[in-house]
Image 1 (cartoon, rainbow, N blue to C red):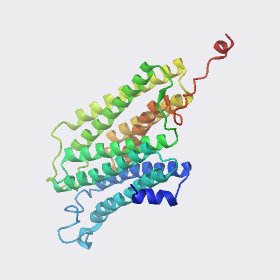
Image 2 (cartoon, rainbow, N blue to C red):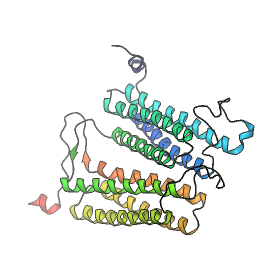
Image 3 (cartoon, one colour):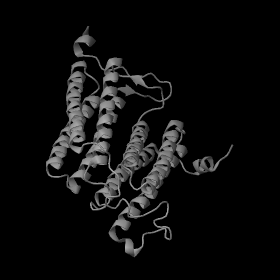
Length: 323
């Protein structure tokens, strides 16, 4: 059956490089929307627009009386359209490329529905008066979008054949454990935020609820998970070196360790300086980059080729080759 997508594909066949650029643009915008969402909270603009999907009951856009906070909140809402455009470009590029890469197209559509559902969740967050649990869920859903966008970008540089492990199964499982721990670290950070000093509105606003847990204990729990993450990242690095995993996997493990250490230093500095807004914003960016760095490691432990071609065998040691 002919569809608008198939008709477009007859007239436009983007190159593989363009498909990869489109997927990367969607990934970049998914990171940007996380950071700008954090900026809304850190500038106390969470209720800059008092309702959703309109900015006020009478106006779609912010009014002059709403001032700076209304502009910040509305700008973040408008960036959702930029994100949607980037995701739409990725979908069209994957659909029109020849040969058609169905799995890439599905990953693009998964991003689209994540964007739409998170936009609704953002509206619920406003309508519930910045309930900390919906705010946390809003961020976690955004991290889910980052995950799918990263997967599409990585897959755009691979073949469409079935994945073949490049290392033994226990090594792959270890990388999954690392990803789970990093995911818990990010989730714990949302709890610290929910009980912390930046509710998303001016601090004299006592209406916004907070998570009824001790902030210092939550911060300590978050720090403990950070120590576990760093220790596990170091262990992964040594294991990868010992079993001689592919160079890309070892490089990504090193990148994760560096990002984790920088995040740890930044986290301690912001805690002992009363969490200034600029440092919290950088910490949110670092959390997103940490999540990306962790997710990239398992993806470097398998090989995909085009079609049914066999995956290349890992290079042998010179002594083994001579034998």
